[in-house]
Length: 395
Image (cartoon, rainbow, N blue to C red; front, side, top):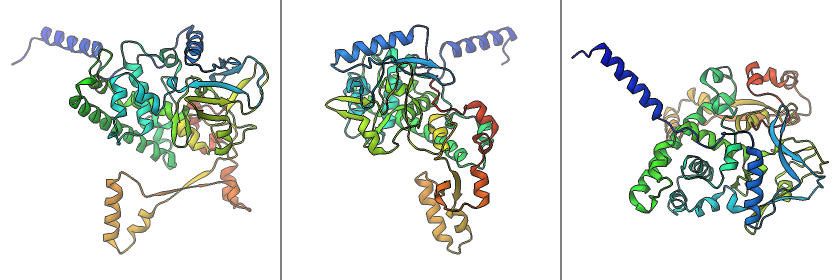
């Protein structure tokens, strides 16, 4: 039966309106919703909540904007090396203990001892989104407003942009990561819906686990995951996202870049996350933190920026046993390995990162590669999308 043209047009308009009013994926409600006065509101919130929990707020530091680097931290007083900058109660920190103690259905879900299929990074990313999605207000709302809603890590590159990186290891890694993000979202949604059906205590006015699972989408989940990757402390395999220290930009100058030195200035003790100054700063200076001594592809993949100068960078080479095995006569061995790695969703190629310091006398070819600038090693568009600078883009 053919419908009248006017009715068809009206139906199309209704469906379009329904798509606008009821979008298929949840939009972030708090993350990145930055407005005038949000920094002042955040600092009031931080001082109030830290003091309420008997911690020490960062009285000698404040958030500021820096040209070419976005949001960062400035010293409002002289800071001495080793000085305690902040003593943050863990109840304000996104970490495993805090998530499990959340008085929400999400906290009870995460706390289940048999919930072994979700990593700490996944739990923290989900907790971040739960606080963003919930309708009844979040303790962390002033902090969430200051987090970026867009990142420049390569997992967010389009296919066209990744095509420009073909031939580099990071292109394949980024495509694999996109697929992993999709698989993780489907897995955690399935798990949450299973527990919702088994435990009616999950229902509450704020947001049920089922409602949260239905709103969860891969774009928001990937963003939250990379906020954790790029901002959280990693200490003895545990992760801690502090709603202050994560605004510190990167600078490797004058820092001792070892895990032992990191633990001298960062600690978790007696229910508090404690951060001390790794070097002295005069009043008015930007306060930095080193993200470690990493090659450029690590900074680009996980943090979304390229340092202007980096002695630790390297050239990546891929060695593939798969290629050698194609020529092997033991076809059955190759088939077994293909199946094992395929089922484990793993690639059995080996990536070698070769640095200048690996050889006393460098071959002229390698010297030519390492003498290139970042703009030459990576396609030119990368330098336009991700500016080469000393610090991390926090906007």
